[in-house]
Length: 584
Ligand SMILES: [Zn+2]
Image (cartoon, rainbow, N blue to C red; front, side, top):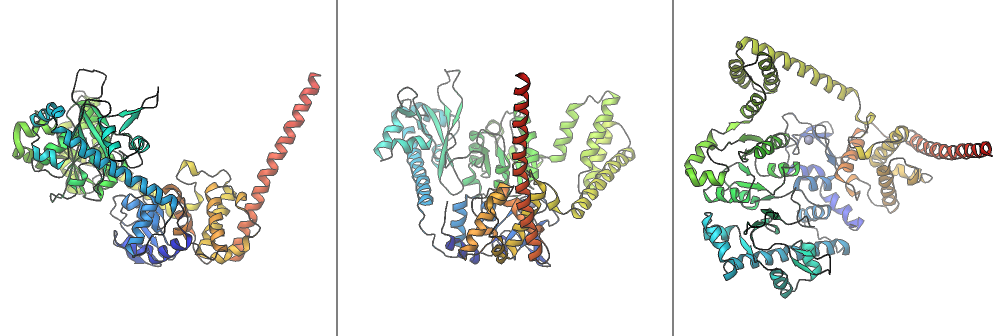
């Protein structure tokens, strides 16, 4: 993924991190740094920081961090090359030709085009003689022709190669068809055949308007082994953890909130009845990526999952994920209908609106969930119910909320409100103390004395790792220090990430290129965050002596580690010889 280094230099120089972040976050200056509310997690006090001199951002709340390209990737959900392209576009730069990158992009473009052709093909099949049954079914399910057009719904014929033939005729190769996931390869002879057969087809369209996959509903229910819904597999253009059905339409809604449902049909029915803000997860449970995607378009989500047990479990799982992303949640429960589709057909849009308006909020939903766990006729279970509710109520930020729900629980638990209030206060105080302590600990203990958050980045040799951290942070601030490292080899680093980073920094410095966080390549989001933390912790002037100390520590630790290994080998050999000697 190599963009020419000189191009990246200019790109990052022309995209100061504070300007790019400033498009999404209101930043206030405090000393040399800027602070604002983190765009990646919900918060009321600013723990998101930008250090313009270091070219990095870092959030002390959710620990996300990195350079300007990492920020662009994270906030827009882009890949590295796409983030670079977006930043280039922002300042009117032309992205130079890069073969590897160009070929991957071309491959994506071919797959988008192929999917679009496939969607057209499926849609036309709905009106072909073979699609009569499917069309009848769709109309019977209350989807008029206008809806079928809006959503591009189609039909995959009940044959083995209709799509294969149609796409070959359009000039797509078998390899492209395999890459698209729209065909399956026979193990026996390597022939390809249509993955979707005799199914009503729902195109999945990303927020940029590209068809990236399909969901297919079975038409013939005779085969008990066939899945009711079949989705496209993951491909280079389709990731179901990152996409939601109908978000391409819902993002344009003027309703100000988004409705999250389980099924394609539910989302479509809601759109038809005027709730054009409905989206559906693609047959997976809700992920953090989904939640982050939603935050780009709204801060309010109405959650509607099916009334059955599986639906309720899914909804209980989704709530904390949505909350963590900072979304306000309302949970809507279907009464006398199993899902929104059925409800709308039975009772109409107005009844649904009423339901929506008094949709119980998160607190009520959670209290209900707690209540279901206990038998309130039993004294000891009632105590547990009250204690657990007190814990929940103590987390509410508003005193009015605490009183309202406190009174309700007191009533149900058959205790006085005063007793309930005392219980809530007790829990609340405990929490405050705990948070205060954690905060103090955070301030007293510089971040760099702790192990990295991510398990994959654990330090094996903490002493060497500290020196490596410090060396990189200092050199990032004053690249001229890299002139002093001629004798230090990347292999001598104990942490693979730092070794890679050091190698890149040195080769850039030797080529007289800028050494900045933003110009480092091939970092995962995790690695970028950790590196940003390390660089951020560097404060005060850098100093040659301290820098050389780091070099020495890294080298001596490396020697020690190797000597130890050799010593161990010697000892082992000796033992073996002794044992052999004994046997003889
Ligand atoms: Zn954050």
